Length: 205
Length: 205
DNA sequence: ACTTAAACCGACCCTCTGGTCGGTTTCTTT
DNA sequence: AAAGAAACCGACCAGAGGGTCGGTTTAAGT
Image (cartoon, rainbow over all chains, first blue to last red; front, top):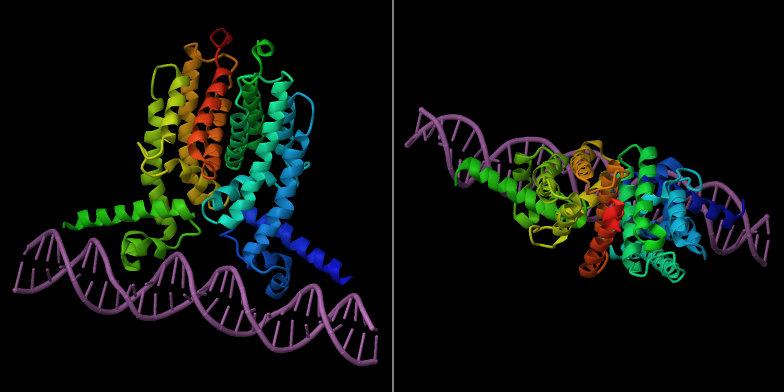
């Protein structure tokens, strides 16, 4: 195999496996040996490609997590339709297990946010960036919806965006500990109910 | 000082300081030495009172976290009034920083849930117990509200309870990374908006 | 006063873990 | 083919961290 191709293959294996194990066990509770053993790679191989564990983790976030969240939760928001069903469908789709969604990527965000918030500025920065991107896109979509008459004028779009994100993150936390099938359905129902409260009265009634 | 009194004092100091440090740095990222140094206590003292770090942590959860969450978020729900303002006020009050709420106890739950979910059965069990208790109480309050006509008959009380909890947990996660004063206010507004969608039409219109 | 045991100390142990480094294999270049 | 470099190996290091243990202090019972 070509050198640079082989290099990319190794880095890829490291990242996907790393994301997998970090997700399951958490960053601090995962050792490099845990990952390397499963891949049958050596310490030397690892440190040839990454300069530290932290560096490695950030690389994973920027290359896998950011991209996945973007394509799953943010990109679909780029529409001119009524934002309410778009947001609901996007979230519903993101919760569909193992469809567009091999790994349970959504968990990552809430888990890692909890693990690094106020604890590791460097890593936290990248996680917050993802949140901000999501929030900004939600807000602009909601505002457009308001302009188009799909959303009531009194609605605080920033507040609504934060509330949507919060309920999603919290639901992810809850989801891990319970029967997921029913749970997701119920969550979506409540989300819709919440959105009803954002509609103009005329449409809602 | 009396022996058993002195013992209790030491255990108390260990627990409060432990909760404090675990909250700030996370369980896996906190060493016993971190805690013992601050208290000027020895390893020997610690292992005289607790049989392991995990044991110690569980003790903290059961004695401090459970009780605080209970008195802050669950006990106030025991009312015969309209559940909607009761729940809003309870949550609002729980978010009031450093009032009834010396430490930021609310954070704990979401943080620790994220840190231990699917990772440490033993610890996770106790955290889930707290959630269950909260959920059960919310559900029964909502059902009573439905019976009394404060909540629409179509509402899925279990779903609503889960949604309320999820938004609270997620909001806690978000809260740590941003300007809290404004944020809490906006969150409460959205929560109220959500509750509007649970009211019977007659009241809502 | 004397004994007993609880509370505590701190040196020590052992494993784990992030990280290093000199050497070997494998591909690329000339 | 020879030289050079990238990819990789695995033994090793140093420090950290959970846990142990023999000994000392301090309160309690007799």
